[in-house]
Every structure is written in structure tokens, then in C-alpha cells.
Amino acid sequence: MAGTSRNKRQLRSNLSRVRGLGSTREGVHHWWAQRMSAVALLPLSMWFMYSLITLTGADYQSFHIWASEFGNSVFLVLFVVTLFHHAQLGVTVVVEDYVHSEPVKMAMILIVKYGTMLFAASSVFAVLKISLAG
Amino acid sequence: MQDDSKPLSPHLQVYRPQVTSVLSITHRLTGMILVLAAMLLTYWLTAAAYGPEAFSRAQVVLESWPGRLVLFGFTWSLFYHLLNGLRHLGWDMGWGFELVKLRITGAIVVASSVALTFLSWMWAYGHVDKL
Image 1 (cartoon, rainbow over the protein chains, first blue to last red):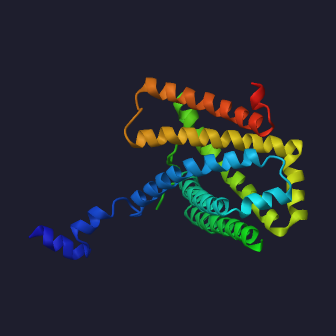
Image 2 (image 1 turned 180 degrees about the vertical axis):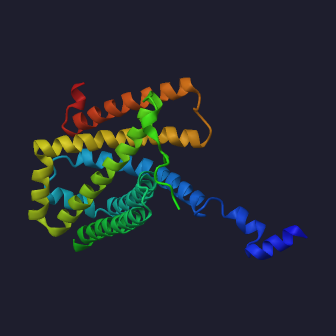
Image 3 (image 1 turned 90 degrees about the horizontal axis):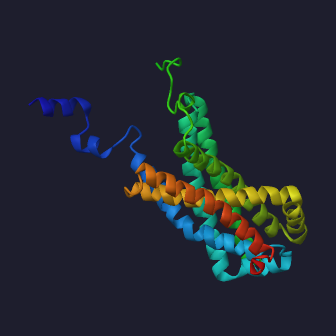
């Protein structure tokens, strides 16, 4: 049986090879995550734009009152987390497409992933501090 | 080993720019611009968390004319990326690949992103009811 012996040599079943579509095995997941975060950002970014319009020229007091409102805090957290997740996915693709040196590409992808996490965490913490400090 | 002399994708320079390719690269460009906008949002929220002085300083910077110009650019980038993103979601579902549809939806995206940008700013500064 040629098929069986080939499987033994490669230590991977045909099913595992079929499931691991693409060279990094994560292509479909990345593609899907980018679309799902995009769909979530449609209403979230429209809510955010509307909020910014109503907050134009706001002083600290009125911004504080707006941001401490339960619904606004929740949507702000959802918005920044989804935003930086979507940004991370997008910038990673751009880096993969335009940076051809492997070490530089690897370093830049790490910076993008950790950097977006840092910005997302800072934003979430800022929202919590505003809304919980009272 | 990788042969560095080979042309690597995306090898864009050999193609004549077309409406479709210009709109496509603008999607990426606005995406990168919006990353900067997101970082500015983090600064704004962090400033508010630090207290009244930090927030007022942020507001002064953002409401200055250079600040407003940057925010205006961010606004257009957001509307363009959002609307062109809808085109992408349409293509993902197999809709809109015909050349005519590509041109029409592309024109709609460009026109409405500009219109929505001006409308938002006029609304923000209380000029919408005067239209």
C-alpha cells in the first residue's frame, strides 16, 4: 500500500494535511477573524462617530459624565478591543506583503501584536478608570 | 534559499494604475492611517483618565487648526475604509465582481465618504439644520 507507507514516513494523516490549509495553517482563521471584527466595527464605529459629533467641544466634566454612563463604557471597551484586534490583523497582512526580509518581518509582526495589545489594554484601563473613579 | 533578485509579490510597479487598483491601495492606506487614529484615541482616553488638566491639554491640541485638519483626514479615512469594507464584504459573498458594478460601487464609496465627512463636521459644529 503506497498510501499507507507514505503516511508513515510523513507522520501526518491525509486528513490533517487537508485541514491545515495554507502554509501557516492559520489563513482561514485570520481571514474569518478580519471579517468578523469588520462586521462588529460597522455599528460600533458608527456609534462612536455619532458620539464624537455630540461630544464636540466638550469639557472634562461633560466628557466624564458621558463616558461613565454604563452603556457608553461598555461600548467604548467593545469598540477599542475590536478596533485594535482588527488593526492588528490588517497591519500584519501589510507587513507580510511588503516586508520581504524574514527577521525584519518577524520583528515587525511581534511589535504590531504586542503594540496593539498595549494600546488596547491602555484604552480599556482608561475607560474603566474614568467610569469607576466616579 | 530565497533568491532576492526575483520579483516578489505584490509587484505593483509594472501595472498601470486603474480605478480598481487605486481604490484598493487606498483601502490599505486608510487602514494604516486609521491605526494612527486609534492610537490618538488611546491618548485621548488616557488623558481623560489622568484628570482635567491632561484632558484640557488634549482638547486644546485636538481643537487647534492642525489638530482639526488631522481629525478631518481621520474622519474621511474612517468613512472610506468603512464603505469600501462593505464592498469587500460583498465580494466575499460573491457579489459585485462585474467591471460595471466595480466602477459604480467604487464611485459611490468615494462620493459618499466625502459627503459623510462634510456632513459629520457640519453636524458637529451645528450647521446641519441650515442646509
